[in-house]
Image (cartoon, rainbow, N blue to C red; front, side):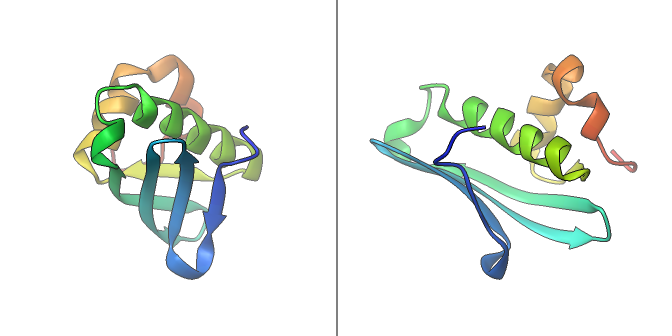
Amino acid sequence: MSSFFRHEPENGRFVLPMDEGRVFADYTRETDTLLITHVEADPKLRGTGAADRFMRELVGHARQEGLKLRPLCSYAAAWMTRHPDESKDVLGTGF
């Protein structure tokens, strides 16, 4: 995982700062599952692959921490659908 990717549990957020802005995800937690409610990239980062990089970091974090992800955000859900081999082991039930 990137040394820049950070968890802000007090804000219910994960953040990946980059030169041109940041990508973040808001979440709520239910026991060992993180409900990903919103993923957003700053406008300058859109279309650059930054959100993809962020999602890979988020999946890696979930795997390392023994957590599951349930994507409620349409971007997170689409990303996990497009990348099943990279995310199926952390996909929470109910998706």
